[in-house]
Image 1: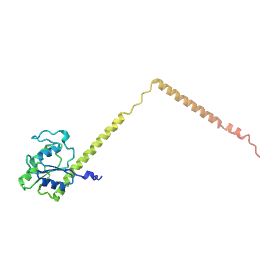
Image 2: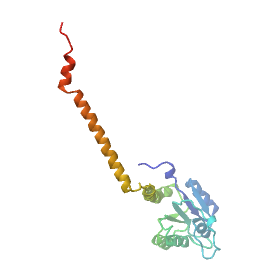
Image 3: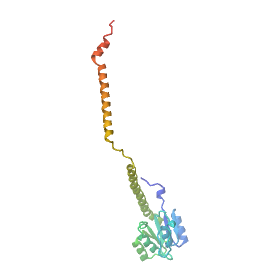
Image 4: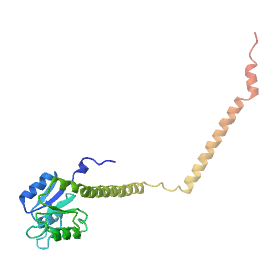
Length: 218
């Protein structure tokens, strides 16, 4: 079955301390949320940076994030540090993370890819780079839809079993009720036999001949 149009919309979390680069990501991705630091990105995702005060659950975002694209060089927390915290989280480790940087440093690129980054892009990010990310976002979207279908299949049998369990059962018959029912059944059988006997007598050959003997031939 094909997915609905709404299911094909992807939500991207962009993390960059540069306003220009954040605006560029917003233009490349139709649905996106932007944060200007790694700690704010953790707050958006419901994680907590150890150097920041605790975030109340009411402030946490419940939106489904299909991709995280972050700058490498940021004050306070680098994109590499953000990548490590996401991959250490059991609830967020499956979200694809992409690192971008204006510096082409091979050792930096290798370290990010080894830590679990899906891609490493050099700035400025181009539309061709965005097209490479679609398979990664599709992977998270399909997993989310499959999980929803699995949860639906698990909850439906439970509801059915509850309904069946609530059906009242018939009370067992007492001995007197059983005897009365047998007597009633026997009386009905006797009545049926009497009716059948009366019908047979009315249809006997003797009675038939007596009916036609009164006819006179012309």
